[in-house]
Image (tube, rainbow, N blue to C red):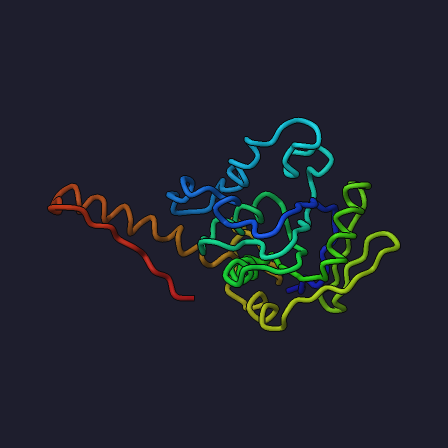
Length: 225
């Protein structure tokens, strides 16, 4: 199978530090047992508050539609440790995120689904965001081996820890219905586990109907990776 070592495409500049997972996917959309369709709720509340023109949310700007790289600032993905946040971003079409820094759990969940979160200096992030805002059609080219990002004549250093590349390259099988990881043909094993959990959930509901419990009981399915 072919290793994915390079990501290229147009970008979405999204400014602001400490953008948390509650903003990325509001909590009311976390009831589903799979991530199918989660991209429809990406930044839903933030996007509703956006207005026309310069107040429009970046994900609603026509010039950024079809972009595959997200440009963010510091501590992106902080807050609660929900996997729905990176899943929604990836399923929207984002293949990589470049930022100043990332929350650790968000970083790990993104690596597991093949969406590398690479870091760059504050100055370089600002330059890239300015560049894309001036020219939304420009392509960014990330090279994970060389540790670089190029856009036109601009070239800057990016970093992805070796441990993230090891996790992302682990072979876990093939599933065409799930996002690819950094090695083509791999599947999102967490989503696959949740998909299989539907059978267990259905059985539990049938048991509950035939022999209802007194009081309230919540059941959780835990999948070790």
